[in-house]
Image 1 (cartoon, one colour):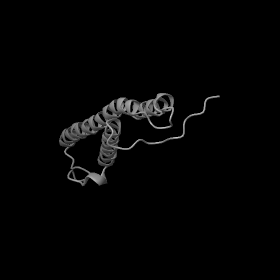
Image 2 (image 1 turned 30 degrees about the vertical axis):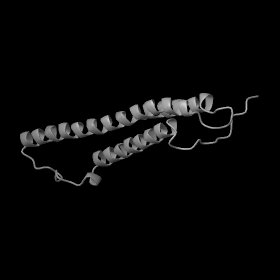
Image 3 (image 1 turned 90 degrees about the horizontal axis):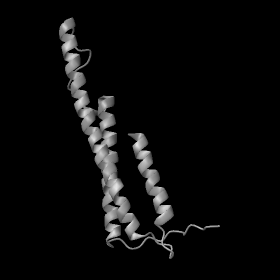
Image 4 (image 1 turned 60 degrees about the horizontal axis):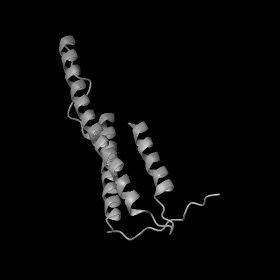
Length: 128
């Protein structure tokens, strides 16, 4: 997952540096609009990762229950713990925050692309 995150962020950075700065020094609305698509896809992928973690947690819980039943043992910890007391819960929360941030970034990129946000001036890249 992190390799994909890094690859998409590198794509955004290098595409913006290469194609996204207009001669007048502003960010190209078209390029930012096109780059909103991989940002949105990354947000979807992060949310799918959260859903996979939820199903994975339920699989492991069921396996654990069956093994404990076979061994006639009681669980070592309670099963109804708050989300922040398990690594799975914290990991899901982090990925849900990432997905939310990417979704907000996508919306801001689209608003910029359609002209709802004033043109952003950046320093043009100097070529030798």
